[in-house]
Length: 332
Ligand code: AKB
Image (cartoon, rainbow, N blue to C red; front, top):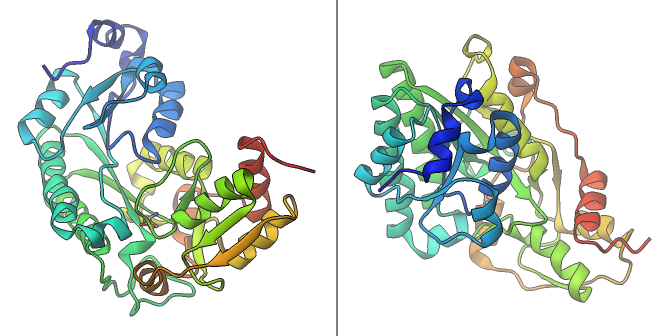
């Protein structure tokens, strides 16, 4: 148990052996499958193992190694790391902001107890550990426009509190035990073929799908709610870049990364340039609205740009064009 099937072990000792052996937890969320695809192109199919507690759809199972892993089960996680000679761990398991508020004790287990397991295993086995943080790690007492890397962080969601904890614990383990911890604060991520779940920025992804399918959209945030956002391709590339960066050029271990910021009404305007019939109504979700009102409007990512050369490719027009192309609907 805990070991990926014969193919994986066989290939890992062949030409792919110089590459890192990567385990991605929470692999069936919004980002894992896309990241596995990118990393497999770079390091080889069998050097990247996706894991989750859910059963993957067939196309995921066929695209490379997949394994059951429960981050709350310390022994199970350690066994996977040992049996597969994992060297990089990408920890994507987490409950997001809105769903976390609906289930605080589960969010505390997954986002904090799970994190502790991952940190201990990473230190014990000398792994490079990537954990995403988020704009949700800031709160209403943080400067919101722009939000620098280092400022007051007093979030009032369990998601935000657990991410500040992850940033601080990762950095503490780095200084105390030499853990190679790397962390990016992601904005809201926009993706075409994978869905987010339970976040505050999810409205933007949903708007594309509903605009294409029904030409109508019910928005759960106020029209003027400005939040930092990023296209998934930029996010995954940033993740690979910071993971590959030589340790000497990283002046910090937790970086803001940014691409664009928009409000629902600005997104609607841009989508209507392609789909003029889009009708939008507003039904504000008070929980999500309060969360969004406490988050950065614009994230300052100057350090990522100067330290390791971060540069986004997608602004709002490119994002909208690409999303509508992916969903096969650009009417112009
Ligand atoms: C959420 O909305 O909870 C996430 C995030 C910005 O971290 N997408």
